[in-house]
Amino acid sequence: MSEHSPLAAWHKQPLARRGFLRVTAASAATVALISAGCSTATPTPVIVDTHLLNLPNQESGLLYYVYLLALAKAALYQKVVDAPASDLTATDRTLLAHMRDHEVIHREAIGYFINPNRTQVLPADFAVNLNSFTLTTRAGVLAAAKKFEDLAAAAYPPILPLLTNFYHQTLLVKISSVQARSAAAVRDLLAPGSFADADVVGPDGQQLTQTPTQVNAVLAPYFAPYVISVDNLPIPV
Image (cartoon, rainbow, N blue to C red; front, side, top):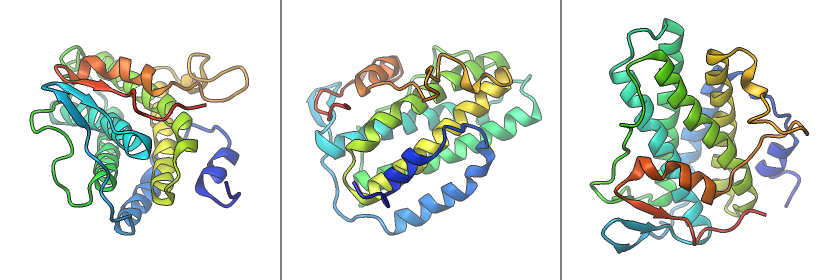
């Protein structure tokens, strides 16, 4: 891999999960990237039965994998912004609205690379089920946000080296940085300084990661009755 590639540059950056509100520039860069994106649509998931979705293999499957993450997070924050808990502070609401905006951008950008023609990416009745979360209190909202943000921050690093398309790689490297900063911001709202706690950062100072199989197991209840299979995805080394 060239030392000038976006992935090589990402590996050289320190962990630094602060500075969430600085991602506006990254979001703008993402929008610019979409305009210059590739023009070939990736395969759609294979529907084996009514509610089983097998994600495609190779890089197209990885795009669907991160698309589902963005879909879940955007759904969470949209619900919170539409009906905010009464005890959320003004700072909480501002941050959550920013995070909603970023996840919508991520969802739409990844969806573009999956299918530039903007036809249906998933079945029409596919929805994110958030009923297990208590979103009527600040504690419940931040607990849900922490769960999704920690999961996304852990999901991206293992798959970045598997990407070969320059545009995909550039986009997902930028999004990976936003995920880490978002997770740090939520953790600081819950407990200042907890962005580097041992449950998310290893003894070597590196972000703890999760494989697609592990992430998919956590997300499974939120996609029911659909069942997502990641068996065809490349395996992170």
